Image (tube, rainbow over all chains, first blue to last red; front, side, top):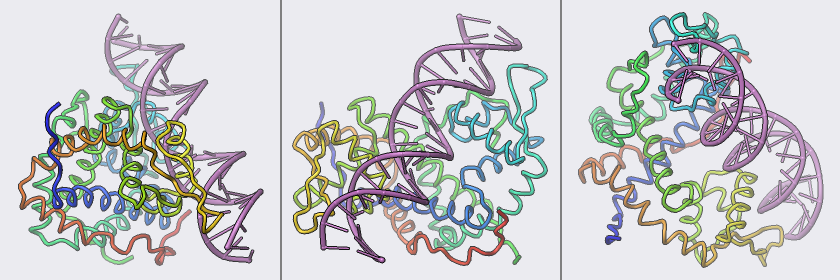
Length: 161
Length: 161
DNA sequence: CAAGATTGACCGATCAATCTTT
DNA sequence: AAAGATTGATCGGTCAATCTTG
């Protein structure tokens, strides 16, 4: 076992700041969406991904991949959205094992209603507090992180983001 | 409803990169700790916080605050760590309603054993992939985020429950 | 009564097992 | 067989209610 390279003060602070601030940010955005529109940030993200897909639908596996959710986790989440009338299941005609999750008009309406709250939150708590340069640096820095994990591209047929 | 200020391409990318990369990073670090030492990142963080406290102990309320966990959530997490012999409860002598969670020698040993894995992970997946300047910029940018946390502000706007 | 901690009910996620279709 | 999706058991978290102590 080799010698441990400890983190110095700045490295440790950068790491901890990243973790704590990102968590706090998500918590605030989630609370705002929940309070004003009765929708969780997690469900909001499902609607966003579906809304950006061709024909506003995705196969379950592709959607699970895009949301970094397990197959069973996605099944239950879609169940809940179906109960609210925001998503429907469609059999996939070319492969009868598979299903599409389709965004309904009601789901699109819910997303459209909630989007301003979410975007204003992202601005108020994040984007507007950083300069253009800071924002670009941050994105550029983070882009190289954890690349090997995200190359989980088994589901071609969608998630073309 | 006021005019919505949409996010432009760079703003949106910075925001999404922050969210997805941070989540991926935590997932990797958690998996590494779990695989090599049988401890979750969440439990690791409990041990870290306790190890840094005076006398390696904290009252439950203080610990819950430090970990951003609800009181009941902390109770169950400490239960689990007590079962593993890594933490003990001590009655607080000055206030008999309260308890300390105390890091045991075994808990400290577990932390010491796992720390190199964690630190090497933070280096390999994060710190060593950014320049010193990028790291400082990132920390500086994020520091101003979400300072006022959880203001239950005018949430009466469009409450369409 | 208020504060600190715990318990019960429940929610949302995972893994393992299952069912259907390829 | 293997792949896509779902179900059952279970885990870890929250909220509401409770118990004990200040």
